Structures are given as C-alpha cells and as structure tokens.
Image (cartoon, rainbow, N blue to C red; front, side, top):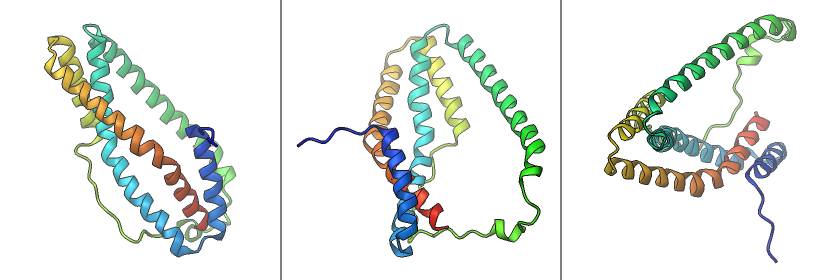
Length: 190
C-alpha cells in the first residue's frame, strides 16, 4: 500500500503539533537530542544562506540580460523603501500598543530567565561570507554575465545553482520538519 505524499506545509504543521505534544511528555535527555540536531542544522542553514543567495540571484540576473541593471536598481529601491516603511511602522505600532499590553507586575527577572535546553554538543560551520557580501557578489556576477554575454561563467553559475537546488531539495527541505519539531519541543519544555 502506497501512502499519499504530504506537502511541506502540512508536514510543518504536524511537526509543530507533535513538538508541542512531545514537549509535555519527553524527558530532558531525549529532548536534548533534538536540541543538538537543531544546533547543527541551524549552523548548516547559516552556512547555506549566502550560497543560496549567490546560487539563485546571480543566474536570475544573468538571465534577465541587458535590462538587468535598470531592473535591479528599481527593485533595490523598492526593497529598501519597503524595509524602511516596515521598520518605522513596527516601531510606531509597538510604541503605541505594547505599553498597554504588557503588565507592570511581570518582573524583568521572570522574562530574562532562559530555561531552554542545551545541546549535547555543537558544531560550528561558519558561512563563507555574510549575506550582504553574497548579495553584492550575486549582483556583480549576474550583471557581469548579462553584460559580457560569455558562456563560461554563465554555465558555472548555472551549475552552482543546480548544486544549491540539490542541497535544498535533498537536505534542507526533508530535514526542516524535524528542525521545526525541535524548536517547538524546546519551547514547550522551556
């Protein structure tokens, strides 16, 4: 009998529910196994994010062609404008509504206590570059490929995109529900 394939969003919702339920019954020793997994997976995600940016943005800009520079400039202006709008909106909404929502009877010590579990061990996987460097590199490679119309570098960034796509589809997406499960397990125990 073949089971139906469950989409990612449904698997994440199941992981959230199971994480909350398991947090109520799992002993700390078993929960720390998932916390250890989350620590390592989080490092892997941090390593992969700049590579994902370079792997997908550079080929996309190169594929746009000669009009990539103008489109990129307009898109960047819109993105930064919306970021500023979101930031200022968040500030003014929180400044207006949070003081009335937060009770003065909750002490700062109660809020500051961190009761989350610690991993058995951790592995540091530093990213090759930070996110801004990855964005600038992706823009530079993409615009350069679009301008010079060379095939060697374009083929290389397309191959890199395919490698990153494999990492996402074969590693990150299958393990994401376990990561979400661990997050909600740890939050429930905390």
